[in-house]
Image (cartoon, rainbow, N blue to C red; front, side, top):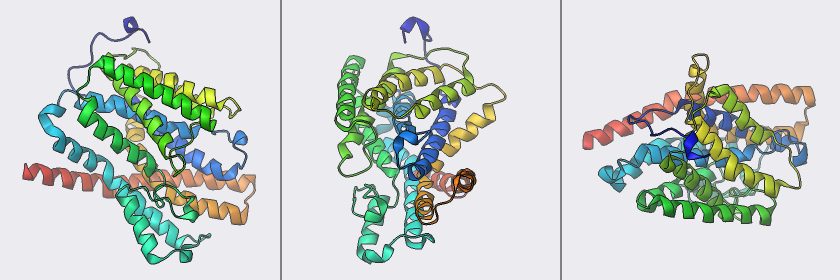
Length: 362
């Protein structure tokens, strides 16, 4: 990405990068399908979307770019308290929703599960830890996830950490130091991939610090793209970039994952961010990108409760290929519908209420 290919200056007025919003939705949908296929394919090499988990690294990189764009020029005026309140209002209502749905799925799963094996106190504690993003990987029926009833929340935990680091340090440091930190975190990514053979970690106790390496590089890289003005003007549009993003998730699983996955995270995703910020959706895809962007976070934070029920159903009933295709396809559409309903009936009203209350106090 040479600077002579980039725009001369970022826009002076704040705008939504609609293509980037739309790509976030594509990545969220890839995560959902990947989680279904995890149950279906015991051999990861057979999973056609076996690298869907890399969507989280794309989220982190996109977050770094967007946070820099949204707050670099105003965080000092708004102050740390207002910054953190803004982020909590934006992120945490769906953390709570995901925890509630996860708890209900744990207690009332019609296809299996063993809630009776856990004391009421332990269940309550696990739920509270999910709500407040306190790692507590103790529920065996939830594969010892860091946040038992809200598995995807592990990435939100690190998103909060990245936001804290941004507010306290990253918003103030020079670009040269930011570049150095990005290089150091790239080395950490390579080390994790070499040690583990992949970049799948971060969601469990034993792989906790893998999540730190993943968010560190990608968030810093996204912030560096914004600060360096590496925005590449192009005409790929939403469809072209969506295909390019999907290729990363669809690449085959192999013994070379410890090389291919870091290459995607270190170079390919930052390139897609730079390209996505340099193009706009056509009239045909404009509504698609807007909807995709809006639904992405609700879908990501609410879908996993259904995955445990699907897993118990699949394990006990062993549906054939035709049945499985119908179930998964229907479930994905239903989960998008549920996410939209949660967004409209809960997330938007709660965030509006909290924002209005905050404005009233101010």
